[in-house]
Length: 148
Image (tube, rainbow, N blue to C red; front, side):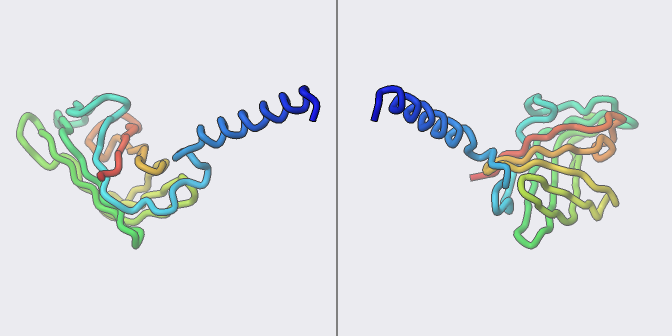
């Protein structure tokens, strides 16, 4: 094989390996099974505790949130923090979810509302309407990481 052909072949192989390595958990098909327990790590990129912006009636600080996605397509969320300075359950939700590739679609039976998320192998990023946490902010981006 001529040297130029070897160089082209080596370059193609290197590019293929780099692309395959970069894909990792960001596969366009998403994880096959998102069921499990997840803990909230950040809200809009900020670590917890998180003070809810643009509150409607109450000053709310979120200290921790756990989300459980069950293999039967149901979910439950519970979060603690403070409301007007008093320790409180600051968010609860439950309902059903569906998955299409990395896209998750949640239907809340508690709020009669819908919201979306994007799943990776070890995390879920949820786009949550502000009304879920008594805020006039239109949406929040919540990063949940799967518990070990």
